[in-house]
Image (cartoon, rainbow, N blue to C red; front, side, top):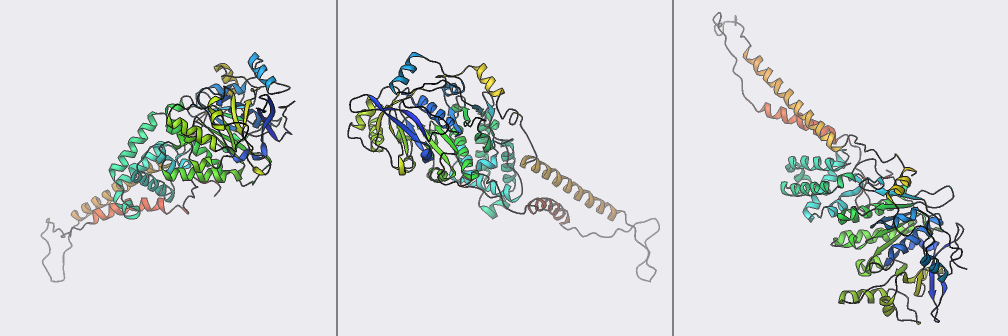
Amino acid sequence: MWGKQDKQDQKIFLGASRTPSNDYQRPEELLLKYGNRHGIVTGATGTGKTVTLQILAEGFSNAGVPVFAADIKGDLSGVAAIGEAKDFLVKRAADVKLDPYEFREFPVIFWDLFGEQGHPIRATVSEMGPLLLARLMNLTEPQGGVINIAFKLADEEGMLLLDLKDLQAMLANMAERAAEIGARYGNVTRQSVGAIQRSLLILEQQGASNFFGEPALKIADLMRTTPDGRGAINVLAADKLMTNPRLYATFLLWLMSELFEELPEVGDPDKPKLVFFFDEAHLLFNDAPKALVERVEQVVRLIRSKGVGVYFVTQNPLDVPETVLAQLGNRIQHALRAYTPREQKAVKTAADTFRPNPDFDCAAAITQLGTGEALVSTLEEKGIPSMVQRTLIRPPSSRLGPISPEERKKVIADSPVIGEYDQTIDRESAFEMLQKRAKEAQEAEAKAREQEELGEEHGRSRWTLPDFGGGSSPAPRGRTQSVPRTRTSNRQSVTEAAIKSVVRSVGSSVGRAIVRGVLGSLKKGF
């Protein structure tokens, strides 16, 4: 019988494909050594994409591969609970010859950007980088240029950009220094700064302030394994996050870029180091500027050698650009509708991406698949795509459907990262440093003014001495003769000198500029 899998297996059992006699008699499997060659799961709503994602996550976990996946509707949370022997699941297991059909729960770590249904996930503004921030705020090209200048100045002047108030303070400081900055980096208008500040306010109101800050997520915490060798399944609660789809897409892209920057080169391992599922993948590419799509293509192409597999989950294969689609070696296509011209084009595109099977018409089959059925093509030996097969997907071993809030709380309480991310840390960064700088500048100005006023007072109180050398007559007794004072612009120059001294002292204390990675995020390890 098929489907029995343990940690020594080098493949994941996906289901059974039909033979020409119309029976499900051939096993369809994903080889672990090609798990980092990326993949795509597509299909219309209700055709079984979430269950396919669940059995893929289970298979990778059993093989000791950590998984990260977003849970859009809450259904994926059932992977944390043991499955139940329902009649239709038992029948499906028998149809695909899954014997024995064992039920079990899997090691799950729940995450939530808002900290409500899982451990909080945070990233610093510096780690996010100017390109992704500009994308998140939907900035114009000139406004994006201002964000880039803000990051450049922060790097040069040794100021950490950790949370939104740091970036807001930096932008306000840039507006005050617009003439000085413009001479070095180009025009910085108050209008552009104001537009960015308004975008930041909208982000803050949408809850993004919960995401930006410290302690920042450590990538190592996503790559945990259990004592029995199973990989952790990291489930991101995304139901609330989906109300801000741009934040959702930008966060997952940031996470993918962090994996790319931090993980070492491993070439082609026997199995992936981590598998990353990008659900609702169309949100990543909708209205994305060309530069961002090129960066995504670059990361997807290169992250394979870090041992990371990226799997896009979306309704329509047209949601993914052709340059990215061409790099996805493992494909699972659930049913598509073909009522509109765009849907018909999507069916044709999906059919054309498969290696043809002479036993059936691929395009026709896509519109005829039942729930839980899919067209499957994975990489075989030597990395060659297998001939597409009409496949009945195996049932999951964990619970089908969501867990209860009480069960979720128990999983969170038993989590290996409990207590590591629950409390926010607010250390000295750009906001505090700029406040300190402003205070020092005010104190320096007040001291300079006080010294100048003392000088004026000293000039007024000076008495002239009698001249006994026969020159002019001494001053009459009891009368003063003031010494004329030439007025200069010393007051302005002293004040300016004091302020500029404080500014220079901060800038000159930085020994080197911070190195940034391929997506503009802070590059660690320097």
